[in-house]
Image 1 (cartoon, rainbow, N blue to C red):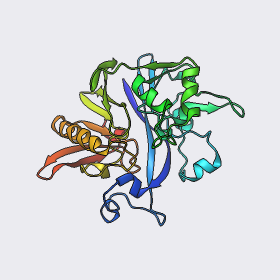
Image 2 (tube, one colour):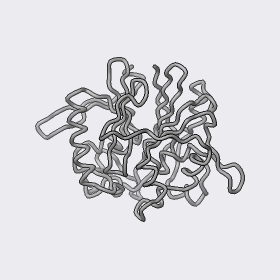
Image 3 (tube, helix red, strand yellow):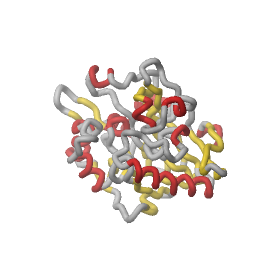
Image 4 (cartoon, rainbow, N blue to C red):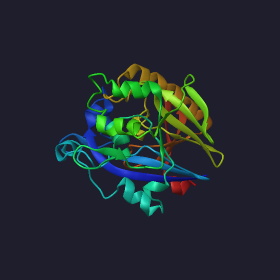
Amino acid sequence: MKIYPLNTGNFKLDGGAMFGIVPKSIWSKTNPADESNMCSWSMRAMLIEDGNRLMLIDTGIGDKQSEKFFSYYYLFGNDSLIGNLKQLGFSPDDVTDVFLTHLHFDHVGGAVKRMGEDRFVPVFKNATYWSNDKHWKWATEPNPREKTSFLAENILPIQESGQLKFIERTGDFTANAFNNIDIQFVDGHTESQMLPHIQYKDKTIVFVADLLPSTGHIPLPYVMGYDTRPLLTLSEKEKFLKKAADENYILFLEHDVMNECCTVKNTEKGVRLDQTFKFNEYF
């Protein structure tokens, strides 16, 4: 098995929305905002090469939305999903599996492309796309709070192509969903978000997605305003971080623009940041 970090692009979101009830005077110390109160975030995917399987975890925001849509998110930088995939020596046709932690537009947008005015098709024509039945139903019958995050053109073409499969949820964990990969389910951010736990070179690497957007979100009250069940997120995060500290997990950060990975440790004040590093520097 070989793992590659793959940045699909960067964008900006309102700092208050990203940190909920935590005052700007506190969160801005770790995540400084611009004059419009916008903070910078990455959309970092992961590529896993394992024998004949080439799995992509999340796909970023894509490029098929309107200019008006993208104007809300201030995309910046030169990274792109397909460009960086090619830099690693792969083409979209090489990808055998696309694992979607959840179906918000900044995680699934790059999974589907526009073909003409009203036609959308999967980017990865040879891949199986993985979600789960509870989250799929949640996304395709969205509540008013999340409706603008679940875009039909990002989601429905995957099912229409026949490439969609569901991972069975067995409690909070599905063991051995793939070779050396277990799946943790968390429900605070959105229903049945999936976090891969990957066994790699005697370490457990966790793709933490939106349970932990950045190192600035490690303290328990630092919960996004986007989360549908913030108190549940707090509880899920507390349990997860304690286990991560006790078992020395490596946390792979999807949205932290400065830090690819981190570890955490137990302190008198609770679990706190230990080390930050680039994935390739560690391995």
